Every structure is written in C-alpha cells, then in structure tokens.
Amino acid sequence: MSGMFSRDSVRHYLIEIFSRFSESDDHPVTEGSHITGDLGIDSINIMEIIAELEDRFDLTIPDEALPAIQTVGDAIRAVVDRLSAAGRLS
Image (cartoon, rainbow, N blue to C red; front, side, top):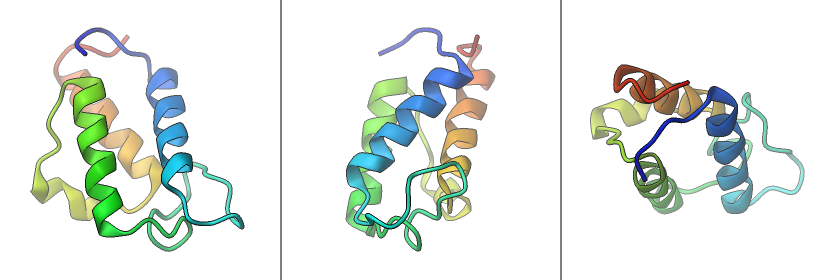
C-alpha cells in the first residue's frame, strides 16, 4: 500500500503488530520494549513482522539492517527513516 504516512500512524501500527505477536503478558508494548527479551518474539515471528511491515508500508528493510532493530522504537525509526527517504512521511 503506497501513500503518505504520519509518524504517529507508523508508531500506532507497529505497537499494534508487536502487541499481536508478543508472548509476554508482563510487558506492555512500548517503544522501549526489547523485541526478544521483553516481548519474547522469536526469529520466525520477527520475519513475519518484517514481511507485514514491508507489505503495509510498501518498502524494503534489508537484511543487513535487522541486527540494529532490537526494540520497538528501533523498528519504528527504521520504517520512519525509509518512508522519509522515499518522501512518503507527512
């Protein structure tokens, strides 16, 4: 889905998707949540999340960028940065 997105809409969507995949009832999903440590999301589900993000925002997150994505906030920044570079962030 191409189009314009706001930082808030990206943040809301990512918190929603990480909440859906979270295995932890002890940690609410926030930008500071560690994806594997706090939320218990395994590598297979991380790849599903990445695929959903790429489809939803019509972008590519290269494999070499994945090690830098440790928290939900890192994921939000990765998507926002790519949308901004493509001129699709309002």
